[in-house]
Length: 245
Image: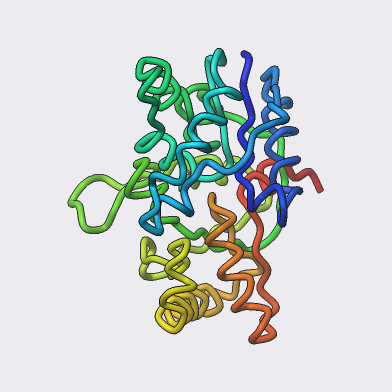
């Protein structure tokens, strides 16, 4: 299966190991992975800040890099959702439509397309799962407490395949961490308070790591953890699924 790997800019710049883990994991699962070298930001920061017109160049560049692939996979729910909902082209609307329906968040791709039933990974630690808002409410990667429906979680389904892992869920399992992209800059105090509330529930569960599907959320939580001198670390789900200890 041929797959194009889309690595969001903040992962490329600050957390390259997440991109490497995603590549290695996909290859272990039998995918033929390509990495278009001219890819850049998807345009989400501009669009979220009210400057959607300034993201047209990002749309054009994304289409140039990823057209022609059957599947595009990215380890970021927020960036995937942005492409799914906002990728646009006046000149090539059909191509843009196809790309919007070709991109997948990593855990979504593993469960829905590859239909993974076994992962050769081990991670013998107590791990807290953080639901990112875009993945949960935008991509429907997991159930929401405000809807009276059967519980499910595609990321947790995969994590339960990892040997030695002990998953511990916070009480308010789908509460926002407060990152919110540029929200954490424009509303710093509110953002930090929300992050501290999330961290307290994980620390109450005595976890070693907090994991999630969005490095942006984990970056926000990591900053708060470091400033308070917590022993808890953050790690992207791709790194756990790719881990053999």
